[in-house]
Amino acid sequence: MFRRFLLVLAMALPVLAAAKVPPAEVAVLATLHQLHATTPAYSFETLGQVIERLQPEVLCVELQPDDLQRRPAETTKQESTRVVYPLIARHHYPISAYGSRNRPRRSRATAMAPTSACRRTGRRPHGSTTR
Image 1 (tube, rainbow, N blue to C red):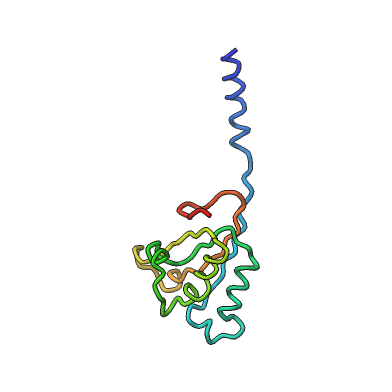
Image 2 (image 1 turned 30 degrees about the vertical axis):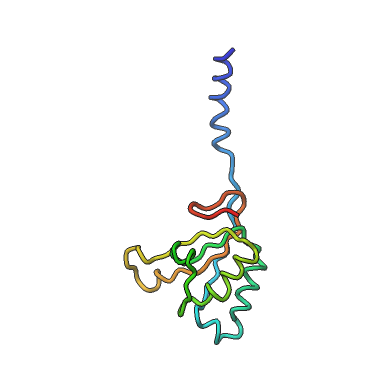
């Protein structure tokens, strides 16, 4: 009997492995850092409204994890202190922080990773915090 159970289980494993995981829906928002203050069409307020409209299940932000914990004042990445941190406090979004401080130097074009608002279906990204 136990052998039959193992045989059925072994036959079912390929079917279970082939089960499709629905793709994650990801929205990438380009940020203007401090220039949101001088761009009426894409102000800090507009950025916050867009993020809230997306209703993300997790925010992926271009910050070092220790900066995310300390939340220092930023002169360039002002969207962090003026939009992202207040939204985290208000909506308790899980956060996935990624920063480029310890990564190899890349070209300016590829080093400018935008802040992302990710709408996940099911699984959380590796390294994210929980609600």
